[in-house]
Image: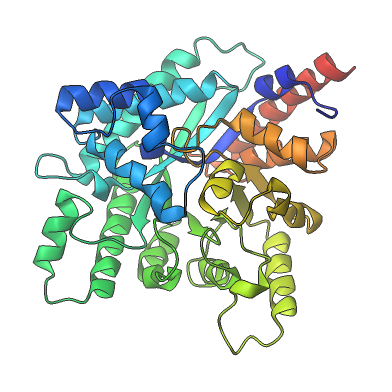
Length: 401
């Protein structure tokens, strides 16, 4: 077990900066909503769904993503969306997570009755209600619970993804698939900026998600330029199913502030550009650039183990190289349901398998708060982070002195 105490891990204030709303439902809620809405599931028991859909391991990322067909199907009314968001906030708080950034793709949920604003407001309403109730339970010296919302566009989409996409592709039937994906992404970016400017909905950033291999980040250059020019934060799923070049594009073409996963950052075999002749040097310079600019990597250990079969031992995960290169990392769940995990479990997994000292863990946890896309002005963020540090140090004294 090492130096840590499990109660300490649960009590310390934590962040989850990479958690998908539609991958983090309570299984009981999914079953209940599916019955109410007459959504067909492979099983209507938790045991059955664990065996058939939300499995311990998957063949690849695409199989991992199949579960979202069922979760998204029960998220096409405002009451369900609000409930799922509300429950997620409580699930996080109950394991000591004090700040979350919930991400999802509204375009996967839109239909004739629900537009972009309605859906994002429902998520915000659920999170806001939970925050109000939770913070009545928080003691004066503890950091309050808070949240942000990250809007995702899709790296790949087609008319089968949702009622919205079906209509969108029909309207652009003379446009190529690649250009239609670009247009849908830009539409999401413009809607995100509009919400940020014209409401108090806590939208804090933009992301692209979905199948990475074959769908490069620079398809979304125009979307991210629009987000960037409107002073919004940017994270990018990159290096999850493709290599260092994907991460390079995320940083250079999309101005990424953070990287989702970054798993294959150090993998020379995944560099396909023949013009890159010195692959080792390319990776060294890329890693140094990321480290120097404190571009934080959102590490999702359980998710990576599930979607990348050849990582048969956690010791093969690139987290060790990230730590050796002094990269800024933060531990995240990715999908609490699909990966059957919590932030506390992710931290324990890391501590049990990598050389992480008490000081290093503290740095990682605090950097999660520092590199968050906190909704309030910077001076408020500094106050919040200071409260987190003070409380963390109080718990250190409680458990280790």
